[in-house]
Amino acid sequence: MPTIKTDALPIRSDEDVVRVRQKVRQWATELSFSLVEQTKVVTAASELARNTLVHGGGGEVTLETLAEGTKRKGLRLTFQDRGPGIPNIERAMTEGYTTGDGLGLGLSGARRLSSEFDIHSEVGVGTSVTITRWK
Image (cartoon, rainbow, N blue to C red; front, side, top):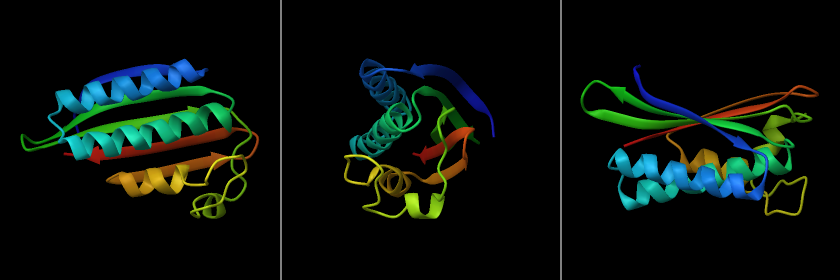
């Protein structure tokens, strides 16, 4: 599947989380996502950026715009950290489960708001979460 455009942003502070949201909204708008689609992908990106910062100790996000033929366009976001990793992904994906002060909706919420969701984590190595939202 051809990648049209790509960029990477660091996630090391609250300001970086805001920049990720802004860039995702900008790219979703450029892809002519509806307001609902924009809101879903920006919300998912915000949750995952916050998780990358809080639970992963920081990292980065790679943004890619995708084209499948002439009709289907999408936005793929890959969040990576080198934090402690997630010992039990199944449990972490359960709504309401949290290791912090949040509501425990970050990972499960991002999965619900995405067309595609993929997570890989290794204890002591870090976590990678990739979401795709298709228009």
